[in-house]
Length: 389
Ligand code: SF4
Image (tube, rainbow, N blue to C red; front, side):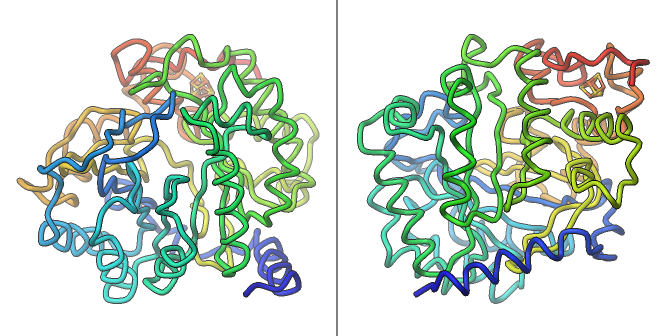
């Protein structure tokens, strides 16, 4: 059982180590290895969330990777080096061999692993404890609003908010580091400033803010505007100066551009400004799931594997570079055309192609694809005009 004192120590150590560099991470060449691998072990899920990327179904797909194929995949992921492996879905807890796969990845292969369960009855205390015993270092829980009204409307059924709060409480009690994921869209933007108190209350290591991409069940009309993106990024930057948790922007790499601009505007030394971490600088957590030193983007430091083994640059960019049933993930990540293109900033089009921030940002490739059908097109939800600073 966690004591408040122990949990505080975990968090205090995480904060203290924010600026410590890990030489191993600095040396990662994203042309060769991703920093993070997200594996959709199943697409099955009992929920029907309105923005679900996966368009999840209640039943498991019989063509999911088998246990033997999954073990081979974990072996191949390990051959990258030491990436973080996220067990995601769907609801990963719908897969009966999940804990065996986690234990193999964590204990046998010594990979750093995290888990993103759905907020259903499957995420019980006993299963969360089992996940911990199997080697999971952090559990990410989705909370899309500060009230039941907002969150339940997102998640498709009443009671989801209460269940989510229960899961967060259990994670605190079993001393499992956690992060809260929030998908930002037009429904929760008006109440978004109420979220940090909840993130803080459950002693979250990280608040990971996903900017909605119109893929799967996500709709363009539910996305916030480019100007609202800019407001949100600046809000997160300001919040990060005082928050007791780390902040991560997903599907919005121009957060790094905003952080750099804000620092330049203050003429602050990067080491004096805590916001530098948003520009891609990494730091170390006690749970071992550190942040990368360089700017990660779709297919560049990040790779996604679908339940059927398709390898994509991200879960929000459903264009495959190959399937692990035919080629190893290492071969696909390093050599498939889409991955090579996404790691070449000179191929970016429009304003992203001429942008002074294209190396550290590059725009959301998934959003460009969702809006224009071209994953190399400029990010239409960035307000920046290259040449300005
Ligand atoms: S124009 Fe493109 S590369 Fe430049 S900051 Fe905006 S999204 Fe990033």
